[in-house]
Picture 1 (cartoon, one colour):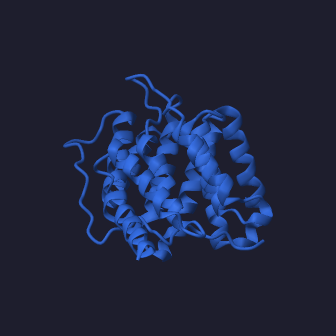
Picture 2 (cartoon, one colour):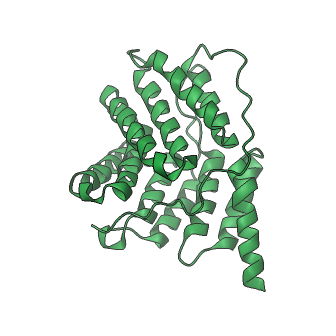
Length: 260
């Protein structure tokens, strides 16, 4: 199988990173760790991501929240992989897979965990293409399960789009189909959770951010589409540093070069 092309041409690492404002004390609830994780992701705050990930350990053995705790730890590892040095990315992806497999083992109906597990299994093949015989079908199975459980989940549709973009055409990948899925994801509502629920709440700004990011990675690039998506992302989250520091400037620079 031809190696999966990682979408790392436009990395999430920044020349200067401003740390997110963490809670003054460790969160006493899993939802507190979840919220810290999301703030750190917008700020590209690696230390904040690690602290939120580590705090999830308190709930790994909890019968009611263990699946979510492992999901958030896996989400943190995936987010860390995106801003890591080249030599460290695969380790974070493997750690994410381990947590996400534990998550779905605890709760086989957690669609978000299945979707991210599918994507991380695909990313693993960029480093170990010889595993395509097992990880390729396992990735497809996990996405099929996520889609069966939650076809209208914005995050599930987004990860499916990212998978389609990075899968070689001979194995069913398609950039055009990926962007159709991205557009579909932007039209879906972010699943609501109750105030006392620790379920995932991210995805509003992030779907637009990923739509823009992959638009710049397209062949040929689509900077106008990217800029429109980035504008939607920062309208929803002004502190989205990848978009404001990297994505939007690059899209504008590409548009200026095309106009010249």
